[in-house]
Every structure is written in structure tokens, then in C-alpha cells.
Image (cartoon, rainbow, N blue to C red; front, side, top):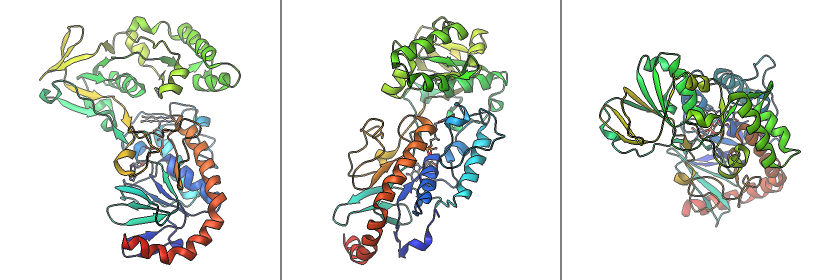
Length: 410
Ligand SMILES: Cc1cc2nc3c(=O)[nH]c(=O)nc-3n(C[C@H](O)[C@H](O)[C@H](O)COP(=O)(O)OP(=O)(O)OC[C@H]3O[C@@H](n4cnc5c(N)ncnc54)[C@H](O)[C@@H]3O)c2cc1C
């Protein structure tokens, strides 16, 4: 299934899709297509790039490993191969997704950028336009991800800088920055890991830490910190869980405030739930900060031709700037006439109910809970669509001819 050609009627550039249209062939799009196939429901995935999981294949650095242990990153209905390590590399993760797509016979339509999608209340169908065609279906599943576009901040004077400026989505390896002085703007997981990677190539990273940040060890007492948190929140109040995590973190990695990494007042899990801000899971950057190989800098005041002036008055020269400034959703640029999403492109309805909108609209992978959230959204969506599937299909088939005339006229 996946491309479900046998279920569609193509007239000129208008494509009738019997099952749902899924926008995005990342882990979320694949997970929901596979879950639908379990109910024998066809779907069509429209993907703007030329491969599955383009974020992982094209926009991540070579050394990336899953941040969370593999049991929290599995897609539904097919686990990781048993011989995968606890934290699979990105290459292993991509190979897993390729096997997943082939196992469920998922064949996305590549190079199809969804430019607009709108519910047509007269016909009761979603009309989804790409550069080539218009796709029409009862159901629209948004799977374009929380990380669809890089966030490029406005930094005073940046246009004057003579060296290279790159977002982490274009960063592959520190080998491109060997022996350079590099300004890394941002101190989330990407900023920390890129700074660490740069150290391995004898570069001198200066990491800008403008705001507070929770850094936690990736493992606590031999268990993954994420796993410990997931287990504890089942039994204890959130604030108490945060206190326990911070106590163990202070015992194992010490007081990060002294390194210039001030902790927010709100605990890591409470903060994640309230704002989506993910704590940094340390994979080695902290020891490089302690040894002085990664320099922590306060906010940038101004970028100059040769470097940067900082808020604390220091001035330094740099060869390159890496923007580890995160990503944002792109849903508001293409989903029209629908107020289910905020202007930031996230569902307005809070977790756990943000997966379902009105008129056959669904979202997968927008719960700020990584791949664990993706898996649970995908299963819920497939069940919900399956509940409507049989009656709707019959009804759709019968009324298809009159709808297509209506849609063509409008
Ligand atoms: C460096 C990094 C490390 C991460 N590590 C982890 C981890 O260890 N564990 C974890 O759970 N999460 C991790 N994440 C979060 C990760 O983004 C998600 O878990 C996962 O990739 C989300 O999958 P997705 O399918 O929702 O979104 P994406 O992977 O972003 O896929 C969305 C797809 O939609 C396509 N698309 C976007 N717009 C359009 C359009 N208009 N038309 C057609 N197609 C479109 C994109 O090309 C893309 O292929 C990490 C993220 C990053 C950046």
C-alpha cells in the first residue's frame, strides 16, 4: 500500500485518494501509513524531498545517535533489529525506517511539496495542492513535523561577517571546521553536540548560552535518564520527579551554574510539558566545558566583520558561525482556512488531544514527545479513521462523480 494507485481515479491533474492523504514521509508519516495498513486502509503520502526521513538523511550531522534509548524510539508494529545498540546511530535509524517502509509497502510520492491544503465544506473533502497536482480526500493527516524549517535568528550585524555561517541542519562534521575558531549560537542538544564534535577536530568552539538550560546526564545509575523520568512520573507528582532528577544530576555532573549553564527555576520535566523545551542530555560536551575546550559565552551583542562582541564586553575573532538555533513547524504556510494550529504551527489543543481536529483533520508527531508521541498518535489516528472507513468509502464511491464535478466548478 502507500501509493494506493489501484484505489485512485486520476483525471488530468486531479487525484482522488480513497484513504487519507498524509503530508510528510518522516517517521510520523510512515508510522501512520503503516498503522492504517494494519486496518487495510490505503493512503497516499506526499513528500517534498526525494527520500523518506529527509530530516535524518539530509539535515543531521554524521555523528548523531538517537538521544533516547531505542525502546522509546520504535515506530508501531515493527521494532528495531535486536542487534542494534541501545542508542542507534542515525545511519542505523535510517536503515530501520527504510526496512519499515518496505515491510509495509509504503511508497511515498516524492518531490511533491504541499503548497496548500484546505477543507472544502461544500463537498466535504480536503483539497491538497502540490506543484503538480491536486489531491482530494476525506482525510488529511499532517505529518510535516515540529522541525520542518530551521529557525534563523536576527542577530545584529550578522550580514557583515566575512566567514562561513551555517545552521546545524547544514552541519555534517567538524572536519569542515578543522582548527577554526567557531561561534556556536545556541546550547540545546544540537549546540552541545556540535561543539563536542568540533573539539574532536581541534576547532575551538565558543558556545553562546543566552538563556537558562537544564543539562542532565544521559544515564543515571546505569539507567537512561529519560527512562527513569518516564517510570517515576507514573507514581510521583511531577515536581517531586524533577527534584529527584536534579538531585541525581547535581551528584553526578555537579553544579552546572558554575560552568555558565544556569538552570531554569522550573524543573526539567515540568518545563518540557509547559513549553516543549527539551533538557539537554549530556553525551560528553560537559567535560569539554569543564576542561575549557568548549568556551561558554554570554549573549552576542553584535556580529562584526571578523567575529563577535558579547554582552559582557568581550570581543573575539571567529572563522565561522554555526546557528544551533533549532527548528519550527511550517504548517501555517500551507494549511489554509483552519484554526486548529497556532501561528507557531503547533496544535492549539493541548496534549493528549492534539492529534485530532475537525472534518477529518489529524496531526501526528506534534505532541512534543518525540518518536514516542509519534507512535501513540499514529495508532490512535488509524483506529479513528478505521471506525469511519467502511461507511465512508461506500458513500464516497457513490457520490464521487457528483463531487468531482462540484470541485472542478469551484
Ligand atoms: C538532531 C535531532 C535529533 C533528534 N533525536 C531524537 C531522538 O533521539 N528521539 C526522538 O524521539 N526524537 C528525536 N528528534 C526529534 C525528531 O525530529 C523526531 O522524533 C522525528 O524526526 C519526527 O518525525 P516527523 O515525521 O514528525 O518529522 P520529520 O522527521 O521532520 O519529517 C517530516 C517530513 O515532512 C516533509 N515535509 C515538510 N513540509 C512538507 C510539505 N509542505 N509538503 C510535503 N512534505 C513536507 C519533510 O520533508 C520531512 O520529510 C531529533 C531531532 C533532531 C533535529
